[in-house]
Amino acid sequence: MAISHTSPMLPEGALQDKIILVTGGGSGLGKSMTTYFSKLGAKVAISSRKMERLEKAAKEISDETGNEVFPFACDIRDYAQVEALRDAIQDKWGSPDVVLNNAAGNFISPTERLSANAFDAIIDIVLKGTKNVTLAFGKKWIAEKATDRVFLNIVTTYAWTGSSYVVPSAMAKAGVLAMTRSLAIEWAKYGIRSNAIAPGPFPTEGAWARLLPGDTSEKLNVVNQIPLRRSGEHQELNNLAAYMVSPFSRYMNGEVVTLDGGEWLQDAGQLNFLEAVSEQEWDMLEKLTKSAK
Image (cartoon, rainbow, N blue to C red; front, side):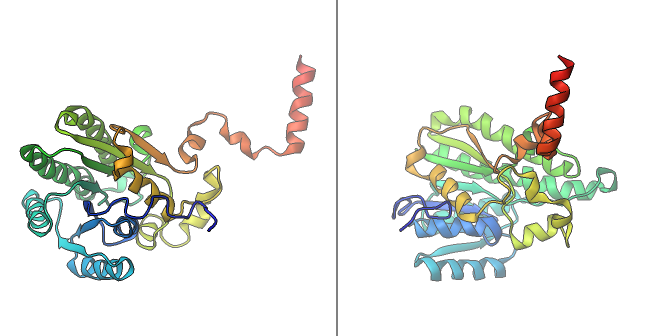
């Protein structure tokens, strides 16, 4: 079989009997990653606020992979509900080996149009929710004297650059990034590693439609801002996430891996706009440069 960027990367059974929690695992990228983890033999629990969606996703994944997926409704903004989620997984399978903090929310808007409640809606899910999950499971791992436990957090490249029009998300993801790196050092002595992925555009029907509604994506030429001139394929993210939660990555700690086709570097480079200069214009500029000498 020919190998491509959309081929599964890890060997069969690479996550056999690993217990993994994926927040926001009932749809979009969370569901994609859950499916691949399950194919690799993991026992995966998925959470979000809507049980009906979770149960549907769990059945679809189980039917495809042959492995049970455990759905549990949880609003991660509420610490008591996170503790209930933790205890339910413990009763079902035992303590998780991996927690993937994937649940998020976002929308584009000029900041001055946002209400305080709109700000809170994003920060409470992304920052407070990730903190709640990390604290609840981290405390349990430490009390159990567990070893080789992994937090994998989904952040964004604008967590370190900032970004206009998604200010609440940028603030919240920057906090998650800081927590990832801080706990990578503080909790390493307990056998807990913390890493993150900063994905570029990986279109999903739900999130893509909410972030860039209607034909906004086409008007803004989102793909043309990426040097590779394409968006990501889900399996590319699945492969990276599976590697980062697998035994193969045991020396990786405090790392943030960017998977965006070079998008953030394209925007960061001061002269990257010169991509738009044609060959004829370069010829003219070269002549002018030589004459100036």
